[in-house]
Picture 1 (cartoon, rainbow, N blue to C red):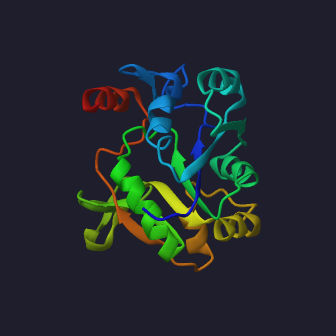
Picture 2 (picture 1 turned 90 degrees about the vertical axis):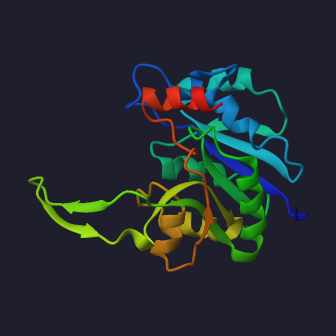
Picture 3 (picture 1 turned 180 degrees about the horizontal axis):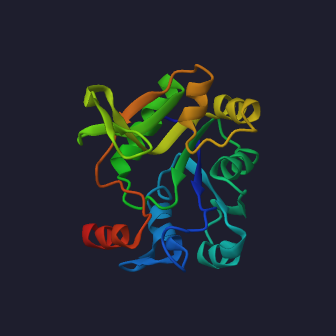
Length: 218
């Protein structure tokens, strides 16, 4: 493991609109909530010395009660994922930052370790998995137009990690956008992002069946 210090941003600003009437991050997986399980994957790394959680204002009091570790800072998120990450970047203190979805509690610690190793050399990395399904392009009327060659297609996951100065500049230059992941902001600016091979179990909790899978896996 390298000697560089890392900040981690774990996003928690969403409204869980596709999940139902409760915030999915506060649902339980075994003996932890989703957000607690996610944070637990990062908290014990010696070279991660701050975890910033930009949260939906409705759950900030709950998170403040939940997390008493001095490494963890709860701040107010924004009205989009991009704005939430931008708010968190404003308080990041280290030269490297890892950005991860709060709703991805099944991330593997060895993947996190490899992300931290590679970003020091590459400046920008994203965890991804090779697409295994056959992908079709479809028109607005539901008619298949063509089958897309999947040999170069990957599904994007998190964590993504960056040299902090690089991702801060991207957020500053593209502040009027609505990007749903941070690596795409660097792509927009022509800055290379490199892949880290992830796991197909590193799902994002979006609907209730995802939570059932996470409970079975854990």
